[in-house]
Image (cartoon, rainbow, N blue to C red; front, side, top):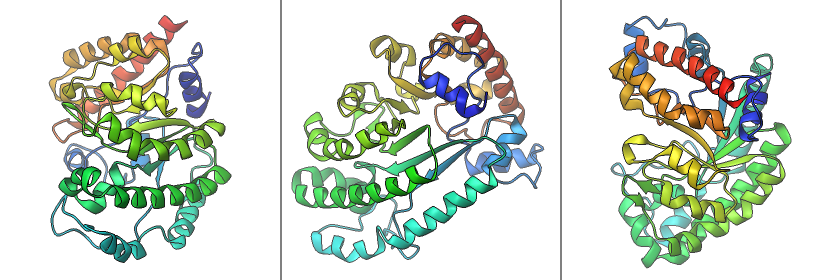
Length: 336
């Protein structure tokens, strides 16, 4: 079976005939790769896909829809605002949602499909979501205030974004068959959601309602990418037809086995506590033992619960991959 077929089996909760795909959805920090170079990662192995092959992982290819032209302005500081009014938004919109972005995106997809045609990768894509994208324009503080102070502006931004995403889906779904996609949102932190259910229903849900049914009609599994303690948000996501979540950060208090108990058919990716990886084999085995029941239950793709940090050595990461294979086989035997 190809990695795509194995993932299809996992997401369908079928009895597994082969182990789950060996995937690192979020790859690695730049600093991690720099350290690994010093520890033996060859200089000529450069792209994420080449590093995946070198480490013995299955290849996946993520496509991230470009929304901003190359001349899009930068905020004065990280998290700072670019837009504070309708006039500001009208001025900056000329840098957004251009047809030339879709043309380049289409060319990038076609080039990737040709380049990887003999490698059977897992293809997936990401759309910037309706919490994430307004924040990039309004700034972190301004975005949170805009739910109260500028609701019409919020809807204008998200309505325009949704319309562009619809164009993007026309393109993507005619070019390849993604197994899953993510809405990049980051709408939770270690204490829970960063917005109320009422604000979710007013400002986020209507746009999911436009896009999610179409994705599901094409058999694309719909995930939300949100860090932090996500569990209180799961009923909200289910309301809109969203089928899964990642990255399931352990340090934020997420318990993947509790999620499976409370939401038996909910899909999950991630969940492996990255902070145990520098501690060696015993700590990693304990983490795999924690996740083994979930791995055996289906509907779950094991991966690190966010990008691998720089304190994880190349040797320990290789050990992690070896243990991933060992425990994937154990999960297969339990599932059978």
